[in-house]
Image 1: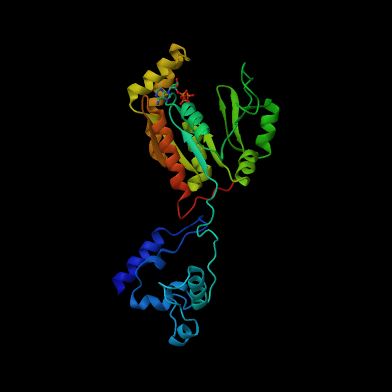
Image 2 (image 1 turned 30 degrees about the vertical axis):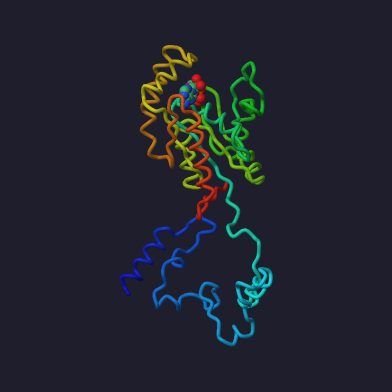
Length: 288
Ligand SMILES: Nc1ncnc2c1ncn2[C@@H]1O[C@H](COP(=O)(O)OP(=O)(O)OP(=O)(O)O)[C@@H](O)[C@H]1O
């Protein structure tokens, strides 16, 4: 008896929710020992016991001969409750999905395919003080703001995270996250490894962190070289940095391999991760 009780205690404490809104106490699902009956409410439906008089007052018609509506009504009346069509599970919370990974692993490629294949996602647009490049669109590629505007956002605590990248500021506006989460959208943030580390410190386990990698180191280097967007010096720095950055994988929740020629598989796995997160009993609960 003591052994059984301590098992149930350790199980329930090991998954005890902290910021999780609708955890089901696991003790309810364990086989009740004869003693555990006394712990549950006598009115709990799973422990409903009917007296003979109660059953006689609400007789259930023969199952094989009665029409279903009549049967359902008699079941309702026997149990003294109405069966509702309300969803049993509460709607899942909006997710914050942080996608990161070393340079050249295919973050943009994966995100672009995810955008085309899943709705209800908002891909966060970063604010930057970098000048707009030809072809870029304000509000789509970035929110282009002056340095004064950016620093004023910092002062007013309007950025979730910001950094100075090669002399230009980049930051994540909180209002945009709040606005789209209120509409029920999931938020996708694409950040570098340092950004992901900062976000982990701020958001903890309330967001999902995905680390994207190439199939191998050779594939990663090959992709960077093939892209031909970097100078020789930049290429050396990017490769050396990428090799270091791979060591940060362990701080993430999921790793997605974007193998050569298998972009669709990587995107498919991201869909699975989002679906699995939506099916969690203990939902993450990001508060921005
Ligand atoms: N699975 C894949 N197979 C082959 N090529 C790929 C795959 N995924 C991405 N690529 C190509 O690899 C190159 C790098 O991808 P991408 O620019 O998306 O990387 P990134 O992680 O966003 O890089 P950075 O962090 O430097 O911006 C691109 O030319 C892209 O088309």
